[in-house]
Image 1 (cartoon, rainbow, N blue to C red):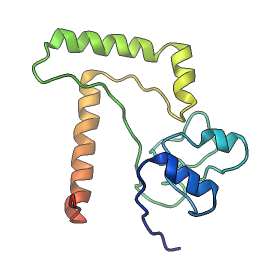
Image 2 (cartoon, rainbow, N blue to C red):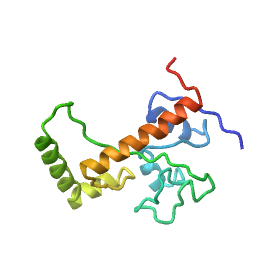
Image 3 (tube, helix red, strand yellow):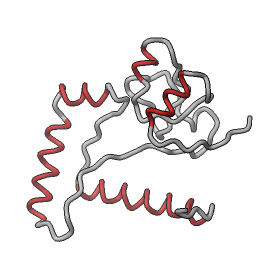
Amino acid sequence: MFVVHVPYRGSSPALQDLLAGQIDFYFDPGIALGHVKAGKLKLLAVAAPRRASQYPDLPTLHEAGLTGFDAGTTHGLYAPAGTPPAVVERLNREINTILGQPAVRTQIATLGADPTPLTIAQFSAVMEGDSKRYGAVIRERKITMD
């Protein structure tokens, strides 16, 4: 199978082309789930290292044969450098409390995501790891901003 990267200016145009049969697949941030539920599209795999709780029978790309593949995303809230630690800690505590609420968890699940409350140290470690991982890919592939 030969794959050609087609850059889109957002998920909506890519979804439109997928539904129209112009492309064979794409990595979706969750906007296509309504079309999956309607039977218009089929989920093939999860790009994260763990299976999605809402689709426990759907394999990860790693399980499907792309060994070591991890394109999972982490969303976070950032504050300006120099924000007092007490403020950052309070924000972290409040956000994690909100992420634990059933209504919020349900809403996030509609986007195909699993809410994962993290400590400040855990979030920092994830961001540092992603920066190193993607930085290595950028250097290895000689990716530039043209």
